[in-house]
Each structure stands twice: as C-alpha cells, then as structure tokens.
Length: 253
Image 1 (cartoon, rainbow, N blue to C red):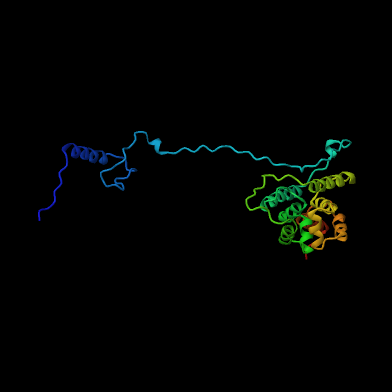
Image 2: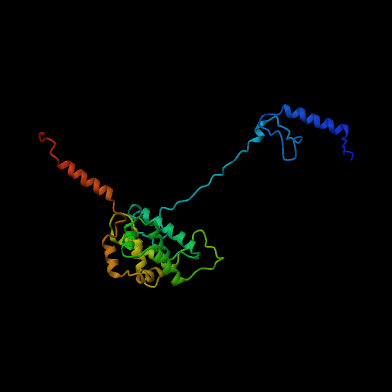
C-alpha cells in the first residue's frame, strides 16, 4: 500500500517559517507552544506594560452611629448634660438589628434587643442573664415559638425599623437616666429594664417565660449604671494599695 503524502502550498510554508523566526526572538516570559501545536504563537507586544492589569479600588465609607434613636427631646437639659449611650449598649443594638435580619423579621423588636445583649456578651447584663439560665439559644427558641418563622423568600431591610414597643423601651432607658441626674452613660442594664417595662412586648414575655421576674429586675436596678466590671483596674488598684503599704525604709536582714 502506498503511503499517504500531503503537500502544502509554498506560501503556507513561508508563513510557518516566519513564525519560527519570530519564536526564536520572542521574550522568555511568552510560551513557546500552545494547545493547538507548536506553530501557533502569541505575537509579543513591544510595550510589556500591557500584560499588567491595573486594579482601581473604589473607596467605601461606613457610617458608625454613636447614639441610639430616641424620640425624647430633653429641652431643659444642656447638650453636655444629655446622657450618652455606652459602647456596649450601641453594640447590643447593632447585634439586635443583625439578629432580626437573621430571622428575616421586618422589624427590630424587644426580643431582638434581648438577643443583641446576649450576642454582645461582655456586659454585666449579659452575664447576669446567663447566670440565671437565660441564654441566646433559649431566647432565640422562645422567639420562634412566640412570633413564628418568617417567609423563606422574605428579605429583611438592611436596618429593620423599630417596633413601637422597642422604641418605647429605648425612650424609657433614656428617660430613666435623664431623671436620675447622675453622671455616666446609658447602659445595657437600662436597656434590659426598658424591655421589662413593656409588659405586652415579646421581649418581656420571653424573659418571664425563662424565669426573669420583678425581683431580678430590682437586682439589675441596683447596679443599673454598671456596664462592665473592670477587674483588671480593680486588681491593679489593690496591687497599688499593697505596694504603698510596704515599708521600704525597713532595714534588710
């Protein structure tokens, strides 16, 4: 059997040879072959900067709120006397909005405030609740039992608006601090007692179901201005007191 032979036009052979010549002078960073064979080669660009992709990072700004929305307008108080919310209370409020979005609720209610306090977790309020068996898991479970699950295809807004009861709880906390005339910030203790003051709210009902009562509310009220226990500072103060009591003039033995 005669072997099969193939003939190529002369112009095609010259075209292939010209590629071989260009390949020998191509920069080293270009591939010498491709998936289609050794004769197909990307023509090198004279300006190597074209191989560099430039990324332009767009600037983004985030707005951080250092206060919570209240409808109370203290007209008689000077601006420097208006109480401020503590950092833990603000973080608890932010976590409350996030919990409402996780559950796909259209609003941020008192039950979300309660979950926000527990999610933040570092305040004396959160520690008191956990010590009395009121945990985030239990609160979330009671919330679903009381309010039910949201529609699977519903998406909460980025910042779910407050319910009327949640707004009144914030106003109660603000007013309570304002009426006391004491210095300091509005703490998560104020926020918890604000939730408890709304008898018909979901947060109050969940607290009552989990064993919170008026006696425990009075315990919270005793330390209402404490947001956290700074054990490090107290320990350092005790160390300083001990150090000052040492008699450094005592002769060594």
